[in-house]
Image 1 (cartoon, rainbow, N blue to C red):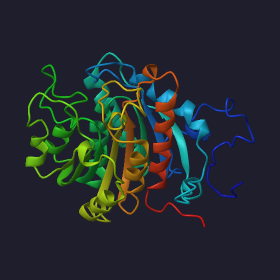
Image 2 (tube, helix red, strand yellow):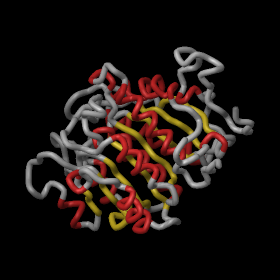
Image 3 (cartoon, helix red, strand yellow):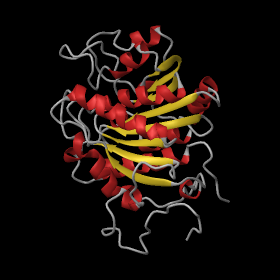
Image 4 (spheres, rainbow, N blue to C red):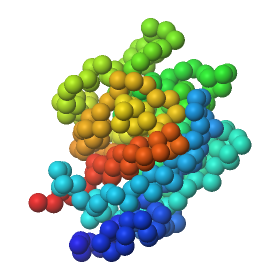
Length: 319
């Protein structure tokens, strides 16, 4: 057992995994506080989604499945809970009847998180949540690099006439100057579109787009070495991971599944490959638990969130 001065997950030999607190990794819950290095935050929003609803239940289900995640990375030797003071700081109280009001609520909530110098790791919720998070982080860090894993580019100009929804946010982020498109990488885009140029708007602005077909049947470790070289070690960097970037054979519990996506090992390679960048926050979005009664999608999501903690700057490696 660790003798760390930091919060530790409640272990399965101390309390059965079907008991104990319903927090992420069974960590202590906390208010937004100066004492924290990293805050795990839920945003139970799905009114920005265009297909199947249900991501409002994502944060709760990811937390439930996180009981199976242990505190050390056995391959990377990463020890996030010996490196940072981490707590579950609860959910953002969104307005479930008003998307634009929810966007403002989320941004204000993350403004308060930034005031306390807490690095946010967020459980979604549909992908709309990333835009207000980026707006809040921009006020503190300025223009960011962005690594975006997703089956979709999310660069529509509008959806049903709306400028803000889960499929428009990265066009808005580029237009608003929140992210540097020349230090932005999108990985996993695939399947069918409305035009042969569906991904082109981002490419024309300097974004590197790595379609899923370029990832088939190989390790993504070399790709992530290229991503680190592109981003550099100092640029404030945000990681946003849509679970539908992963093939529905591994992660069926999502609202807009697409065939022939990334594998679970590739997902871990991508997140582990962020280590060495100046990662200032991350999110895991679009888990819709009702479409996967096995719980495997939420379990995979919880493990990806653990790897996000392991990839934060300063995470120690144990021998």
